[in-house]
Amino acid sequence: MKSMIKCMVGALALIFCWVTIGGAAEVLKFGHVSESTHPLHQWAVWAAQEIEKRTEGRYKIEVFPASALGKQADLDEALSMGAVDFSYPSVAFAANAYPPIGIAAAPYMFRDMDHWKKFSNSDVFEKLAQGFYKSTGNVILANPFYGFRHVTSNKPINTPEDMRGLKIRVPNAPLYKMFPDTVGANSTPIAFAEVYLALQQGVVDAQENPLAVIKSKKFYEVQKYINLTGHMMDSIFTVMSGVTWDRLSPKDQAIFKAVFQEAANGVTQDVIAAEDALAAELNDPPETTVLKVDRSLFRNATVKAHTAKGVAWSKEIYDAVQAIR
Image (cartoon, rainbow, N blue to C red):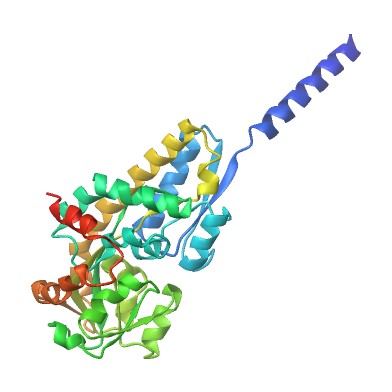
């Protein structure tokens, strides 16, 4: 009897080990370049918790902020290989792989927030996302709002003429050059993690980013003016590696997409709610001045570039975007 009991216990132990090993969570990596204080990171952490819960522990996501897994170009390459499972490429960086999708990052492309929201839920956007998937094999799960991009500088900028000759840092993607180039500034690509030092050392005179980034990266410490140009309504795609996506069951694909769309809505709401408060907060230090500008002056100087020769999107797509009401 004792030997039978021992055999039964041993068998149960083997079964337990088999279930534990077979049911072990698959650990996925989410790498991005934003700071841990930014809503993008905070909602990525929330999404990781939700994914683990909704998949009953079959998947866990580790989130690495602040370029811990590399610069955005490194992360984009890692996505394609499946070495990183998720990232937050900006629209302009995604356009390096599929140029037409860059229309969403063109300066002054959208009339207002309502126009941007309707575009994000439109057939036009879905068509562009499908084009991105066919080109890269990677999947756009969601489109969180990153904020209005504004110019910071060490001199006041009230008109497009004030930007002539200004050496301004931009991300290393052609679309970020469209605005400064059309107003006569000198666009200078510098990696995101190196911007603060470049401003501090005078390598560049200015940079452009949303207010939340200006705060989290403390650019106000090395720039005197925050000029509210609002030249881009920037968004950051939540992209999943196609290598990882293809391993998921249809049920799990639906879970991942639903969770990250909820997270994107959370990011968008937080960023919108924070912008007015941030403008007041960043205007508080005596060494920093927030300037409101007449955006129509900058828009009028820029929109001609939307349909200039050589843009990456067709007139059909441009007209479709502008027709959204």
